[in-house]
Length: 240
Image (tube, rainbow, N blue to C red; front, side):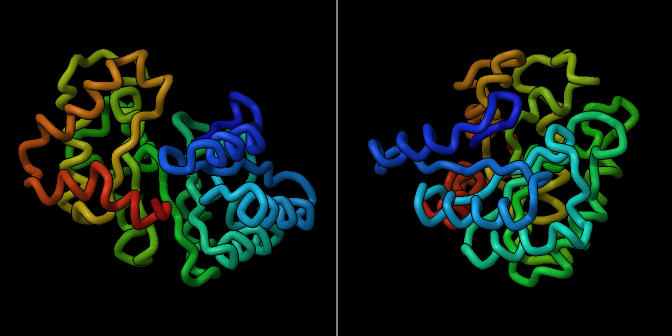
């Protein structure tokens, strides 16, 4: 899963997938601010030629308004290619952050489009005034009730649930667990996918700990729910 802060590495990721197809799948990265015809062609190339399994957007880092009419061909092409769009709505505040209504407009106009909201949409989880059951998160989760193809990943929640990203909690991260619990209670385990957000997650905990938060903690989840979150859901969404 790429991020634009590291640059565009579609060809590199494609080569990794080609060399080790039994170990990896990859996601492509596009800059939606380019001419829409160029973006549409790039999406087709990413899926058909590079064999990547979806398109990643980090809206504040490549700032655009997802719900604007001019981007409709881009979303339609992703849907036509049969891959999901993974969208990071941003970790802060500003004009391009948390464009939930823009995403709702996209989903309303492109029937069947699969969207994964990364980091639970972040949803101001870093804000100490947001307490369980996290009212902004509840607004994000309402998308799942309207659109059956919306999923949520919990990558980077160790950082996202820390107050202003200061990682001021320690393992096993009770605030992160509460955010997962609120999500589970609203949308169920079949709409949640584990993720690490490596390497930035290492600012808060080890890779092994970010696994154990689910496998050894989150006592509100049963064995089936943990199995879905830790792999089964991703198998279905990304086609492992």
